[in-house]
Image (cartoon, rainbow, N blue to C red; front, side, top):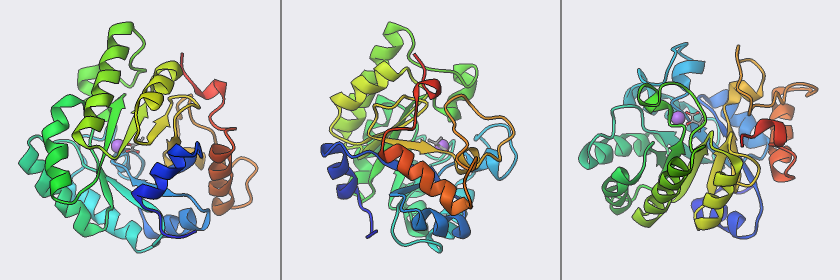
Length: 263
Ligand code: KIV
Ligand code: NA
């Protein structure tokens, strides 16, 4: 595999070639992710839960994200590295630009922020500063206290329309990719078809351009997993083999299956 960049992933969307993304937080796993041929790594603020043992992503800091981003970069040199901007680190366009620069200096190739149209100014500012942005809509875990829990979003018509409108405004503002988390598969398909940028789904059905899973979930070492997760360690001979099985299953469309999707 050669070095992955944003144009390679855009081409994959255009050619209807599905790709896998996995979260990763350290050098050892990053090396295995690369060996498995996976195109992109998300240094997710899910590290607050899976590494730090917290019950939400809210306590994660920009220093935590920069530290784990730097760890990941030492283990691989091919996957595209997307780093999450944590809760409270992008309340204004200026604060967003400053904190995003910290993650880029740590080795990220792109940053991810949660939210809709209100982020347009921040996205423009980041692009001007040379920082590509991945959006994140649907279930946005940093807003768990507003949403009232970790639940499927966009099931009613008005909500679905609002998510589609937000997706279009993020793309118009210059977002390079979009994560859609826990939305009905029909809505995810509609958004994927409406956007030119790659859409990465998690709990969003099989019609998105790509899939992302939390590393610890796909390795079957999380205590309680969501319906949209498959344990790829089941039957695998090693961690690398589990990652390869995940990569292959996304590419050939066998993951996610109906049982991993929401209506
Ligand atoms: O932090 C994370 O792991 C994420 C993915 C679940 C999309 O944002
Ligand atoms: Na995240």
